[in-house]
Image (cartoon, rainbow, N blue to C red; front, side, top):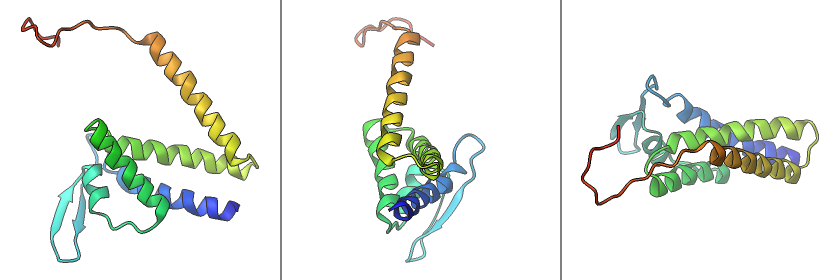
Length: 138
């Protein structure tokens, strides 16, 4: 029920909050200590999430989201987790107002479509040739 949904949202938001403080140029480093005593100091979200021992299923999904972003793009691992946490935070507020989870998901999908359409409208095409050795665009 609603309490289970809120518990899952809380777990995901805790993971998001943990890496949020490491985001950006003024992001804070985290010191991670493994069970065998190895110490890692980093502000890289992917490393933080990779080294965490996460047991909660939904929190583990956040870790997998970061790993997927790293595999597909190679960057933005912290950003996707923070964004997902922010979306879940807003979803929790909507749940508190009595909205059904399916309606919330439909709203997020519609918002994604609107945002994608707007990005297509403002995007500028840059023509390039991978084999040309001409001047590099800066």
